[in-house]
Image (cartoon, rainbow, N blue to C red; front, top):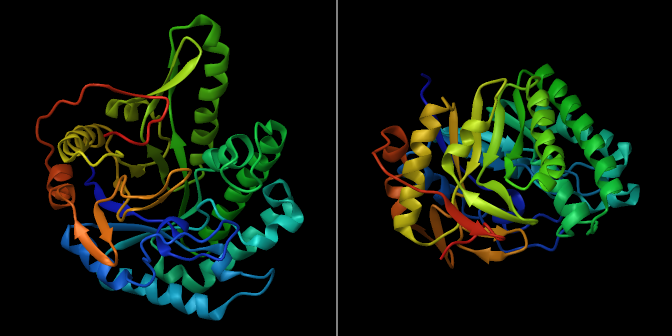
Length: 359
């Protein structure tokens, strides 16, 4: 059984404090201003891995023009991670884009896919020596859902299924091409996938669930070309009658049929109830061990912006009060719990129609 690498994650838009991207800037935790302090805390609580990102909009604010100041900032940042002995898992696209991509129509355009590949090569060439694992794209399934079905991200589509299908095809092609590009620079590469298994006892809903679960198989096939099967795992989806409900079920992770070493690049629970947070962590620790996961990365390291919900503590291991960092009780036992899972019980928790927050 392999030893799990223990980590936590941030993302550019949700935590950096500025991104100059196609979404309005959020305050986040101003991580890029306080990353030295944040990384010291990461070491203090025993992390091995720090998952973060490079923001395409900062690196290439105008088409074909790469910002050398932004490059220096990211080089200093990733060097600071390396100096502390942390492994860097670096996401190259985490739901945000340079504003100029929309003159081509966004991800429905293969030209945007080509421009993205040029950006990936630039990052590999200029920063690759400081990246341990490159995660090409965060949750392509959720990105297209939020952008073309739910309407939370540009172009703010609503039930635009044909547009979602076109964007998904371009993104999938870009992920595979970027993987080849990164490997040519000697980098380990994958992408992250939001894994949710859907279930029902309603016979009429089974065709819908077949379609929803089929994408799990599609992305597992893509992971055959990657160094890791990198999944973000939170909940199981259950259709009671015709309403989708979300269920917190840690053992649902065992449904992942990973073709390459399993890395859980996000897991977590959105609550400020420290007892419940600990019971969840304890249950997940046992499941991660049973699944023989190579990495366990908590979402998120700092509290920050959550899509559609705003800037709140939610999942954080480390709270941000003004500019002050406050280590939560869970963070103090995070490593020891994952290394040596104690016996604990967490029954299924029905989260209802909105799974992100528990009081």
